[in-house]
Image 1 (cartoon, rainbow, N blue to C red):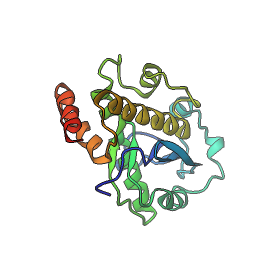
Image 2: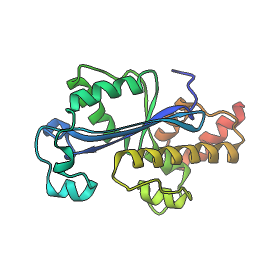
Image 3: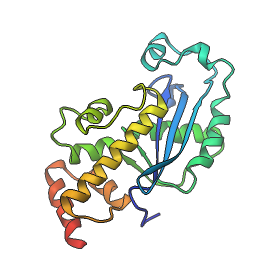
Image 4: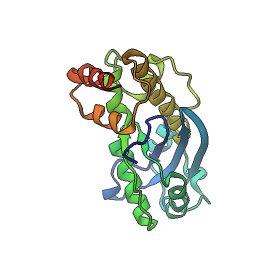
Length: 209
């Protein structure tokens, strides 16, 4: 995957019962879109039953209720299916450290593993949209002029809007720096560059073209 292009990825989002899988929190919804050459070509969305009741706060925050989770497949069953969806792809998520923790934790419980790379759209946005008031997904969607595709804090809608944000950043970099093809690894590297040096880094990519 070293030469993978940035505009062909799986963008995913988890809704969860809390913040820490290490302390017993579980995924309750997964949403993802497959992007090929900048176009969403497939979607994956499933609620999953964590095996316990979720808090009223999580019900209010996500709009996912305990009643909705009754009778849903287990996390293990859903994640076994999802592992097929992401196989062979790199992934993107907004605040990816959070989603990657849950991805790895839930895949391990399902006796699966993810072999690709992961990039954080939030970190990239801090380098590309430095003029945004903040870098929450909802703020960036408005700042970049992206149409809302559903309710925030529902997994598929968040994944779709993150995908559109990801593409808007690729397009902005391509247009501003005249870079015809941006690689996934280059955006991963950009996410680790101090934002004060983002322009210099992107200019150096342009000089290689």
